[in-house]
Length: 315
Image (cartoon, rainbow, N blue to C red; front, side):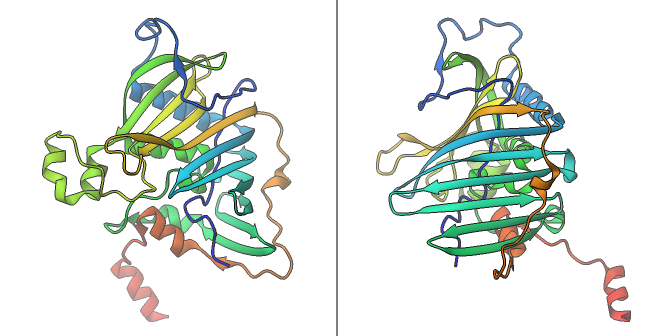
């Protein structure tokens, strides 16, 4: 069975400090909030604080919900996200139900730090896969293909890896103090770096490098035009992540493509290590999805050195 949701290989996000119910629309600016707080950092500085805070968390557990509007299809999801450890040793577990008007898919992803297991169930059929994350991390950028869908970066290391991707791929500008329900948040918008856009839109490279506004129309439909983060004013944890893209047939209009909302979050609470040990179901043969993931992330194996070639030849 092929994956029924190739653009949503892994969805997870996190918040900190207290339960929060995010409102469906973007956070509303508080009266007089812009520029009122002298301690509010710039956009890139704020993202750096967020990356460090989330990466330093010994463990994270949260419930999540999300909504996707893409390719004339609405996808709703609810689930649980668990994370433990730091760096390449970080482990995570995601369990989620994804629903459209036609079907519901159960998704389970378990990462032990070096290998990712993916299990997707649709109409009684099971698709079991494995991904060699060590090989994936060693991959070098390839000139082929468009960028992966927004949330796929979670597959490389949970929320910390997603945030690092945002930091590397987007330039974040002005920060606005806002309200997300009754929670004070700092809202910041990010736009693709010139380097990313020039690589994906080679016909516009010169204009992009000069700082001119690019035409983002040629990008594939699953690629957002900008991202918005809503971060707790006090704890610097992301409570809501939004991806905005073009609304079909409406000129310059935009639509909310993907939104991740977080609640019932616990930081540094005990997490059973058994949650990160995957037990393959009986009677299902796993398939290696490493090559598939490398294509989606736009990376390829590094070239083999001459010394390695000689050693292999001697064998």
